[in-house]
Image (cartoon, rainbow, N blue to C red; front, side):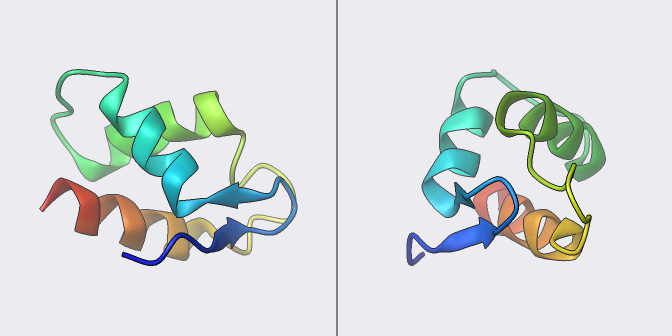
Length: 63
């Protein structure tokens, strides 16, 4: 997966999301993973326009 910026407001990249996911062992759902990634990276806390893109990246990384 290309390392591009997913959240423009907070300048969060695919690599940042991947790092946040790998810092924790296991998530029961994509939503739980999203909450953790959001706490670590602060993505989707500005305008919120990247919410779906962040979920897509998390889903792909968890697959």
